[in-house]
Length: 392
Image (spheres, rainbow, N blue to C red):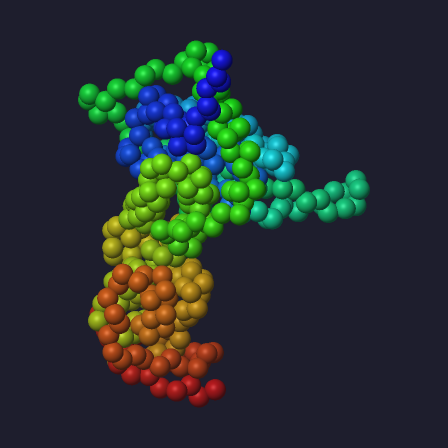
């Protein structure tokens, strides 16, 4: 009797996608393709240079986040699911052939009421790339231990995850089912076994070709960190063939663009953008005026940034990360500490490229260390038009 041929890679991905969409209503076709490829990639982790994160998030409860994580758990490689494991336990669970880390209710770990969980966040950040072990000192043996961190991870929760995690993630924004949208109920005892059989078939297919996958260098439709994150998924799609190579690249473009459009920018990027608005047509502003304008924007949140709102010191610390510093500047009402538009030009060009070009003209600062003679004579709305050189 002739033995049936095993399904092709494309057929296995089709089966996996069908299982996903049977139990879960995903927001878009591209999201369904992305999750399918992410799960398949987990079975080929030893061949990959990066371990993309999967962030499953929704604005409210009952958006299907945990159900999607159930299907991921049933079909991924060696699932390690946790709600409240210690960082040490997670670290010790990662081996040369790592498990797939699944974190439910991640908003309780990284949300505003959490303690920060910096150890776990550090693991999730470092573990995105190979050869980024954690170092720990063992007093008993008087040696430094190297603990592997490389492992794929999926996190489900309400709201956004930390920027450093989402920047390394395929992000799926779940939503509640609309009237008329239906999904099959998932029962662990009944449904998990056939899904684990599908996982075994995926594992067998991909583990036989790890050396081929490891040498793959696919053409990528995205760049930089996004390319690092999506490359493993594109490698799997190219290996599967059929329609999957085109679908993988379409998903990468769509979900990356969605993250850029709807993702939460870091506080530093928001500050740069809001400073651009605050400057208006002015070429220089006193620090007091810049802060006043920033805090006047109710959507900026700077009036509530810290216990008393954004302070001159905190403003200086945040801007110094972009090599922007205050200087002593002569304004019509007298000398005061302030900022020049020209000092923002490089940061705006690098981090806010969508902004309009800078107008001509700038204001040259005093030399560092000069104290203004009349620091409190600047009122809102005055435009810096002159500067004088420092006298030592």
